[in-house]
Image 1: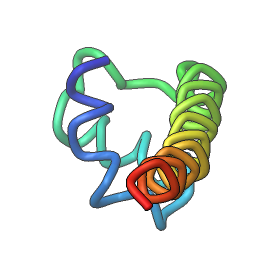
Image 2: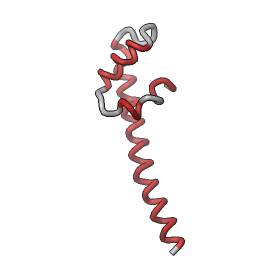
Image 3: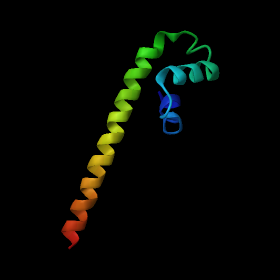
Length: 70
């Protein structure tokens, strides 16, 4: 998972199928078949949900901190 999560920022604009192809090229013994595509799709979905949550809650926390200071 570390290998997948590390470059996700740079490859978030491409599809999961393209990502699995890229991983298969980097690590053929681990990603030789497309069988792990669904797992990767679930992980990307969870990663994206976390990113959205960070963006929304991060903005709310900043605005709350600014309101508390004023």
